[in-house]
Image 1: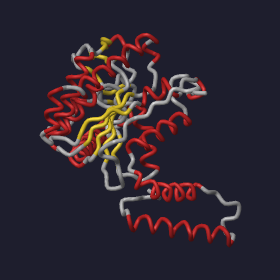
Image 2: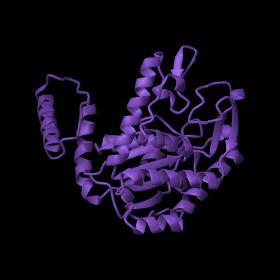
Image 3: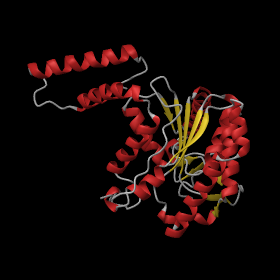
Length: 328
């Protein structure tokens, strides 16, 4: 008896391995995938500007980074003693104007370097809803709790999103014609926008991404080896169709819980991670769990043997993969 609809993503033609360098940008679900990649010690750069919910925010970041458009004092503002930038998440905010500008410009440099070096760029889109600042006329990445009366709320059309995604692809290809670009849609439901509005938002993202994937111009550009490919990973569809139960959500009924994240990660692993990495991943997991172990008696002979064995495993992994860092 079949009690679940199963999504079986097509295996990647250019899978991720321990030689890969990944750049992950976008909505909060990309942080979940990034956390798993960090746990297994894959080389990656995760959201240098913090969480970015919509494609225009990602596009703006890439444009500024690749064009070396540094941030200055006119790009930040102060609210309740904290300095913010409308182009970045509050993770980069600070009580010091100098510090927030340093954070922003370090983030630009990290983004540029990651785009240039990436073997894979993973872009997770969260919403089609955006906020336009009335005074500047610009669409912001984050409102930073500025009163809503200072913004106009807009829904990006599929055509707007498609154009933005094509610009993002062109920006990547302009400095790196070997990167694989993986699109996915965050399964996080933006219910503050409303139930119907959330579905409209997600549908616009889905339509735009698949329009890009089937675009004749993109296919022609790929045939000229400008890029190693564009792909779609169905995070949103797995959550909606396979995990169709509130037991897979956090108590807010909006965010996937740890079980759901692990389930989707396993699907991602089976699709995008080279099987040749699985043995190393198991070794890394053994070390990571060993580092979390808390002994009853740290001075016991048994624990000293455990520590010695753990250090040997770490040394063995780091000899093969010098970039691994188990004690940052």
